[in-house]
Length: 635
Image 1 (spheres, rainbow, N blue to C red):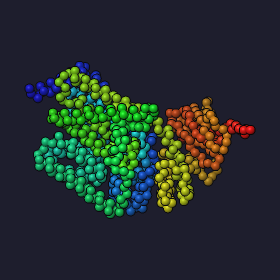
Image 2 (cartoon, rainbow, N blue to C red):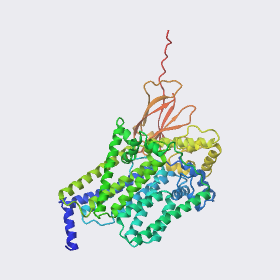
Image 3 (tube, rainbow, N blue to C red):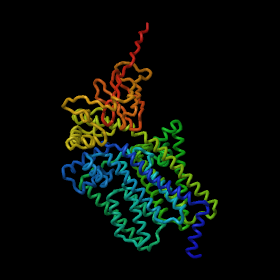
Image 4 (cartoon, helix red, strand yellow):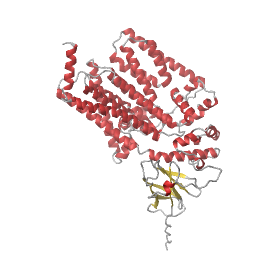
């Protein structure tokens, strides 16, 4: 049979399972493309809504050691590779991102989060590029291909863990994934064509410099995933391997020299027990299942959905992921034995090995120092869920392979089962997205109160800090260092002390910086006619919770507000209490007109509902609690 006849037979064979494939192929292809767009837009919009713009946690370290050199003009190239200690990684690209938004956005970490998501989208594109490299023989296979590409974007940009997006430094974790995927595509191409060892050496060296120790994981995973593809001569294989090893060694020598030159300390996590001892504990089995279950549905989401059966739900999720991984390795081994192992399956294998290695690194470094439950840390989900992305790539291989099952019935069953699995995975992502989109509502008051705390610290940095939020690790710094860092932000007008930052994020460190409250001068009141002439005025009610009464302590109060569509940009609920600073209790989005919250507040506090944009007062209400009952003394 000639090649033309083979192609014709192949197309007829692929069309057999679904007789009328043209309409279905068009619908599936359109759905896959819409899925790519929706997943990317959802991640970008979510990052814009929840990425913490303020200096938080590890960012205080960079503000202490790295940014002063840039602001003083003494920054050198070697400073990009500085580390906190032996347990840290050199992060030159992350530092370049930090310099970018410091220069152009006054140290706005929300910009860093958005850049991280953009890199995540690029990572999904790099994977999809390998999946789409080979043109499909018929429209239905092309449609299946797009469905799997959409699944890669949905899983790779999953909202399963909100912490990946709320903490911009964690969002930049997409950087090594993108670099590793591009590196693997390069190496795979070199092995399948005429190898150029110099190119592999340079690429490995750059990968090692940009990702530090993670490069070792990426290079080994790339080498193992490429083994079934090796068709080049022995000499070509050895030269490529030597080039990769040389690049890694050169990168490690350079980073070691930088660490010695910078005087990097040897601060590492000291384990409270050995790994072997951890593996022998009663929690070891359930602990080892955590990466599997959390990769599909994180514990926080499971707890909210199944509060009484969280453990059982976690076991079901872990079992489902393990079953998918068994299916994955059966596919890989079967394709290898049948000499059908191609670039798509090689990419899937590479991603799965990276997921295993990163997860093993977390277990080795964290479990002995803490315990098994530490694996539930939300930021680790990015490493765990790479295995699901690998499974999505494997689905692409099975749905589009040129040698489907011999039986038409078997082909229909296989494709139907895989499409059902894809539907289930997309359903899980939908629920995770709906659940985590509730978070922005609670973050805005938290950020505003953090901004107020930073202003209090700036006003009197030498006094022991009080009411610090958990992201203000600077509050635990020695006094001199604390004064230095806060003064740096104030003097350089960075972060919350930048007027551009305040307007862009609608966060203000003090009442004086809020538009309409200008310090040092008296003003005449200006009335907003939209509020004054509204047919239905906004309402604000404060009702005591059962048992609350007017004593000296703060009492639980249930507050209900209705903006009556008078706050197109959202509204803010503030409280003023004698002896306390003005505090933001809650915020509404432009789509929310009503809200009910519960807070413990002193009696006679004044509640103010204001527009988020103009700060025009919509309604006010004073809290008047009933008097407490006087209990007569027992006779």
